[in-house]
Length: 351
Figure (cartoon, rainbow, N blue to C red):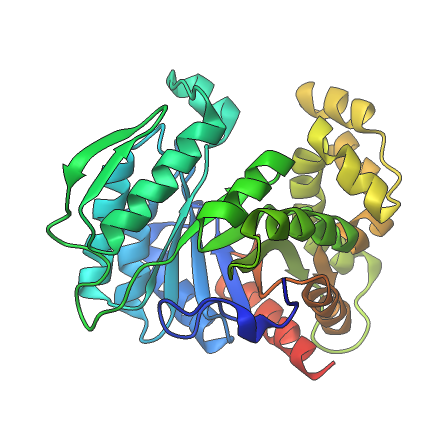
């Protein structure tokens, strides 16, 4: 697969964007208009809105963001077909696209295991289930009559009344969130794009995208990566206390995600020294301060885009060299911090 972002698919206009922003669903809905406008003004082309059980509904949040902006594309991020049937997911994306044609992206994922367990949601055969969901949603959003006999989900020759082609012929790209080899390969095979989870290092991103390319076998697949980000100071050198206050949320997020066994390869690829067993023990015991102390400055530098404007720009440029078409900055749900971080990241285009 070519490393040129211009080779990425453009089913819904200029997509993927060079730069995106991502929300977890923690910000109040009343704050979303200002946050979405800040993302658009800061140069983000896509706003990725996470679907986390027990947080804010991403479909409602997406509508609020779309109504508050003019050009910003909004992605329903990692919608789980196990929590909501693929047909219903496609209907939601199509309804948003009917109101805002060309500005909607759909991302599917299996969902956070702990949240599924808490909600009593089973997810049998996740690889087959995601394949079914992607194929069904792509067909419905393209206005096709879909007959699909999958292992997990089935559709018996139905066509959606409203689809992603409604309104100027714009379609809704369907992206797959993936982190493990078989899911990455599947994303390359069946989806319009792949979304890599936050916490990935540059070398690990390269490894993941190589697997996606194997599955794609020459077909164009957009490559998007979530990257935790935090802005330290716009001018001068911040004192140690101010720097640590800015980086603390990134350390906590990295402590949560890098403790997982499947990140051992990610850490090894980056040369990061991190005792995952100790990190897991501390965080499971509720000692997040202790866990965050294990996330050293070196780990932050290799697995996030955080620090001064120059540090953020350098990290974003590094992720782009690894092959990402779009770098979506996550972890900023305050207007000032989001705007500052995006401005710093935009400087990567000049590096």
